[in-house]
Length: 323
Image 1 (tube, rainbow, N blue to C red):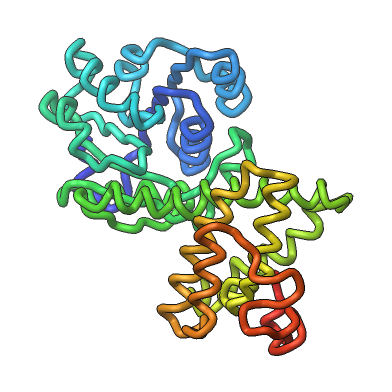
Image 2: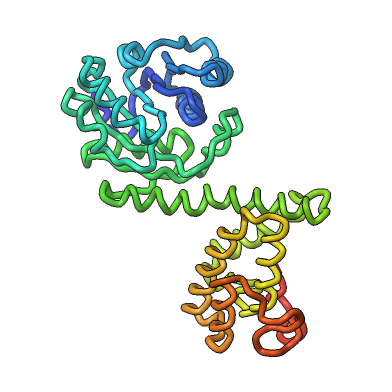
């Protein structure tokens, strides 16, 4: 078997080392494409239960045995655990020559697999750019999901074929660019979850009974606009230079949710910088706004830095979205 010489890999015996949220979903997707899951390893009760639910009748065995039984091995462990795992598998002779060894870490390319490559393994880095729930929903979400792919030239066809068979779209990432690529995804996706969770908590504090219903359409529209237009989609008091409104926000957050103040100020400063750079924030309004963001001190109780009553002058149309 030589998967490097064909655009579509042969039917493979698939093993999973690390039955977290990602591994069983990818193995199930490969199973739907005609491959055969044969072994999975997991330690915690949650991992064992997840493997049994998503890969029924697939035996749970130690990692070394997973490699013995598999043509394609998915290493789906946390980023920080990956180097030690690979080195340990290589040192104990578990790696077989010609075996496809695939990790799903966003941080690493294929260099982290060098100990296994020296033992004859074929290294691939296939990172699905998606959040996982650990349920069958994940398999459906793989349809159209981008994968950050790093592979040796001779394995590019095999890597591309595997991603496509899982329903994904390969996006080639250079080895040296993997940390930046992963930082970008974490900045967008992981921090978004934190922001949304904080927003829902604040809305509940403000008496909103169904914050998810309120935020859903707003955030959906904001995300769509941002993906289409980038910084041109910025709206709200920071982009408008409404220093008084921003100061009022900070005062309320300090009163009701002090843990959110630092994040609010950091994001507002970044938003102001980007709005200025793209000509959305008027320079004459920026100084007072940035002063508020430096210490959160209100300009006045009723008016903003220009002396106009907030929300009267220039508060019309789509600029009011997301106030």
